[in-house]
Image 1 (cartoon, one colour):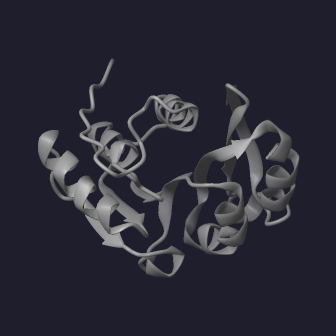
Image 2 (cartoon, rainbow, N blue to C red):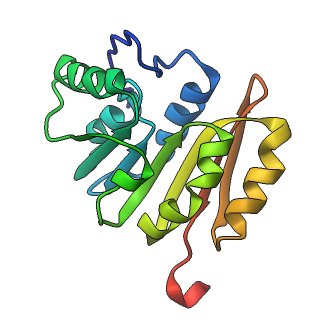
Length: 175
């Protein structure tokens, strides 16, 4: 099944043309969103969160620090006929006290690494975090940082020297 998401990016990031967005969209096609709670950190245009909703997510929270992105997410959700998204202006401290089945984070290496503990705390056991926004030469550092937090590598993709990594949070009996 092919999905179509329209975006009017204005000042926000995430048209699908940049390698990191392409990698994240590609990873979304490999995940099961049906009935899942999803967090899209660094949501930009909202393209990942909108796709998650179209793929059957039961709830989608989008967070970005940029006021342009917050407004653009709302516009793009409307453009795609998607309702019920929770769109929040803020940083990692704005994550609601909820645990998510899937976290999508297309930001940058420094933010991903700095915010790791909040992501891990917000991820349900058995949940998946998919991330991009860093180059292949930073991959080992990012991977080691997330595995040190107890996450298991799940997938890796590369495009134009940009990398997407996905990790799974083990169930308590698997730790």
